Image (cartoon, rainbow, N blue to C red; front, top):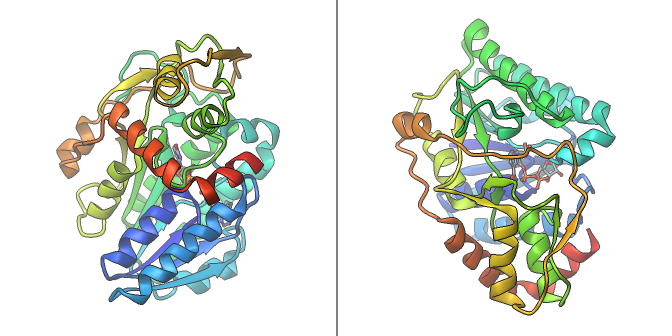
Length: 328
Ligand SMILES: NC(=O)c1ccc[n+]([C@@H]2O[C@H](COP(=O)([O-])OP(=O)(O)OC[C@H]3O[C@@H](n4cnc5c(N)ncnc54)[C@H](O)[C@@H]3O)[C@@H](O)[C@H]2O)c1
């Protein structure tokens, strides 16, 4: 198959692109190398995919550009079978500072992708959504019927794109799926997230900083589990028109996570506490029964195992990754 992966130089899109090239598909990546964290991490991902393509039946092409450029998006979508739309301004806190930019990239950019996909009759658009569409929990775990009251411009933008996805499916018959990712982590992850931050600081003998009292809880989902679901959607239409949670096996308090990382890397350090950001969700916890019923989704990586794997990967890649994390 020929797949367009928008945001494919980024963390999750990079894993999708790499996996598809390895599986023998032809992959085109659209990415503008948005510099809100160090673009060296994205360049590393692109190089990895290019090298893989040399020994694979699949191919890899990087198309540097912006999802806000409708003509550019049209030109790339014209001959692809499927689209994995990951490009977005992904940070909740950035969205609070720049709500207009977030809307332009996340909402208008997504509309460009849907319009191009409709014109080109693509087989499916799989879109990265987020647990941020839920907002304050009325009950936990969140199932897909839980009310949507996002507490950040980022959450609003993702909810808007989900509605577009549903409407493009209902009105135009375009197969679309929205995947509500719950905090994803793993190799080459964004530097400005809790796990990469804690690991980096501990390795440098600096205490991990927890924002708030640390009793906030998160589903941390290992990227391989997210990848598994995206791969399934290459060949099945069971989730077309749906929004589906993709979370992990369990949830963990942020302070417990910080302690876990600290205990593995620098047991003598005391955890530090900083001011909580209002736009950050208090708790996220996903009910994954819909993904399980539709796709057979069963995340296999527990948080403790995933954190250990991430720390091992971080140590093996410390020479190039750590300086870029520090510089972000
Ligand atoms: N990582 C998570 O925990 C998480 C959780 C929920 C949802 N998501 C969603 O998953 C997707 C991927 O997230 P990620 O963690 O890999 O983030 P990321 O920032 O690593 O990847 C996003 C990529 O999109 C690119 N991009 C940004 N604006 C663009 C534009 N205007 N035109 C073209 N490319 C652009 C960036 O350069 C980047 O490479 C995003 O849509 C994000 O909102 C991520």
